[in-house]
Length: 504
Image (cartoon, rainbow, N blue to C red):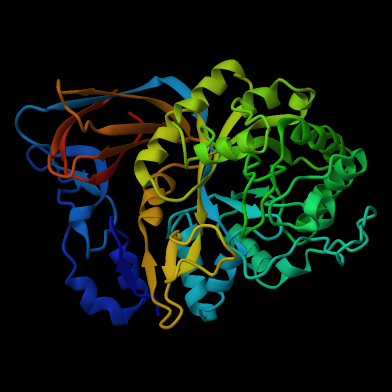
């Protein structure tokens, strides 16, 4: 049995929980109603027929959300207007999701089969759950793994340029079965794969922890072939890899307790120049994304490079797209941990034919997600999809990260975290292929916590508008203005609302 508990912003589907488990029926009957309104067909006085809302917020803690409810308009003047213009279009969405790390897989396999199936449905089913449509998979061990491993491990001091010892056997036990299950639940699921480190024998220092890729053409060639073998092996196990990066956080010079590699622009370009043709020769349609790190280089990493007498390469994504590897690069991957999402728009302005993906974020929630979306991101992928109550298991790195869900290792109880509900506001109401459209906010003069907005048009012509009120004390009376829609509603303090309506 999966019971919900709540941390911070909460929500969920009380209706689904009641249908799935009769034992919860009594508890479901006691849940507070979070949204009120009449059905669109009832046309109660003042009702906004056709516009529906789905709300989560700090003030709804302890309750679960049902299906979207019809909006009942507010009386009186608005302090904010949100103009939605479907004629002004931006990027197409690929999807929203998280990472099914080795740690996540281990945590999920602590559940019995029925619990695990129910939870996977909550995460991936477009009909009954969040409809997550993207996963970012580590290639070998990351900081969230149960052991240190690559797919071509050999004894210290030995090499394997022929990749005779290559095997994805580690992932066949838990990770690949879960990936196949996720794809069965959502056939439109896309996979981005990223290595935290090449095999230790390819690196200076002979370790997956810290160090650099050996500066040798034979190593660049072997590493490119290693990545191609990974893509082919995953495909053979029923999991096509749609996108590939060649190094997670390539500016990570000092990562003392978990896999990491400092990979300068020139080395990343050298690998990609070999990887691109190798993928094509193998008949693989996997696209390459460059960079895979923050909107701006973190001061810690800048100082580490300065102390080592090295160039911090502050313009890394720009310099990579100016290199000869550019012809093989489909887009750029970013993380949310430092800098401002406007960096994505700056890069897009310089390289308009290249896509932008947000491939890792843990914390920052709705504000960073809206910021990424409003700056050309085709995806938002949070970090671990599941962790235990101790933020693990992990080999190092983040000691306070939450999963999309947290699973208690003693009881099996599942906590649906802020990450789950942040993703839900987008993934439940948009579909892959949706287009971001203009959503401009006109706030009252002097408003220091204005409503944040991002809007999307689905392939069927329906619209999803996500609004977030960052104020912890002030509700915003907000008018939504769009073709065929003009309604004034209230956005509670510290709450997020997704409004939806059909094609006008």
